[in-house]
Image (tube, rainbow, N blue to C red; front, side):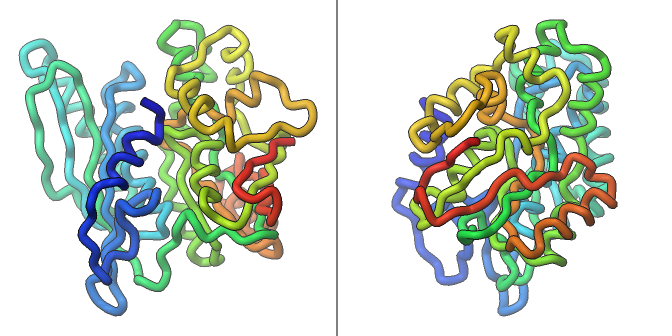
Length: 328
């Protein structure tokens, strides 16, 4: 099964239509959006996964930041969250769960969001995440499908977390690289989203399990535009390319490459390690934003001034080749 097959299966279901539904299963948006009134819509999402780090508190932080990110990608303001827990009651001490929940709560509070409940089940495999509800004005929803030829593409976090997590599990990653990856994954996309909404953008998605190229492909799929990506401008976490050269590549990254390679054209000298990193399955990655060219440099400066130092313009939206990502 490819990384997009499950989403495609869901989108193929006979869906009930509703004029108040702004974003739902019919598209590859980051969250569902439903209009409650002329000036209020709710943004709904959920995400949970197995541990990617050994420290339960940090795992809770990362999982919560990742779940909140989908609301930020739509331009919404998260207001409530509920815990989703699968926990092996008979084989793991309850203190581990308490630490995970404490880490998640810390990020929920940082987002000025209320934790209002949740659900837990006894499961042999530990999993944790959140269901999040946010709010937004119906006319201000940012979709991933609105990119316009001439736009610049801005990425707000560096790539490489999937590869580095694989290196951590193999006992190869340095403490410095591991700490950088953790800080990246546990950082909220709140600031980037707020500036995005203040500035005005044409499209946005967050970079997670489908990798940069997978999510960029969703932005242009079945559209009238394509993307030219400057591989040298893409921020990548230290150590990432070296770990790829060592063969420390997660299965999800390889599946992303297999699934989206038909939409990707390489023009010029792009190293194999870097190219694979562009497919890397991210956890709690940054926002990929399509913004009018005249606003792009000022937008990047604002984010850098607010501490998002890795923010970069990584490419542009073009009229041709339509439906393709050209990497230079």
